[in-house]
Length: 173
Image (cartoon, rainbow, N blue to C red; front, side, top):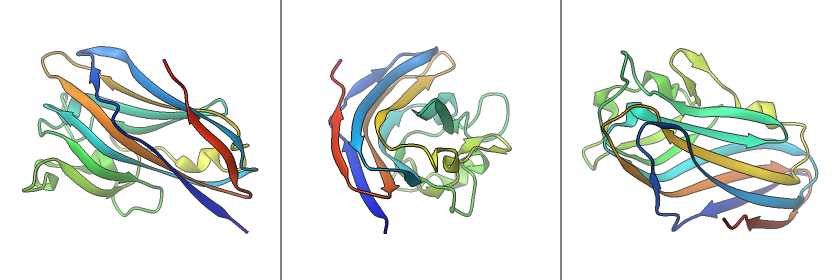
């Protein structure tokens, strides 16, 4: 049997430092859970004035997946604003790196399901399959060019495991 646990980290309201590749991180500790069978990440809200500047990664068990990096084409990526309810999963039809200005919704921002990755290179959340769910999970957001600012508000990680997670406490910093 498999068990899916949803971990939502909201009310972060963290300013994303301009042109700082180290960025900012948020993490949580999981105990229990057995073996990872699948992972999906949703960027519920990053408000930023140039999505092409952003890089978002997930790190766990010594592995790092690039979820979003320099969306779009060209040297500077997409100039459109905001990532709102962007679901990153290996089963999505399109890669986030293929996003264009036309994909920015009338409501504002990018939405929908996308495969994670960087430019023409898909990264895969499958790299976490088979690892122990226990341990630290870290999501990092960085701005990698000057001139635009943003705030990271909320994200969700869905982890499918062989047994129930017994704890998913945020790491306070």
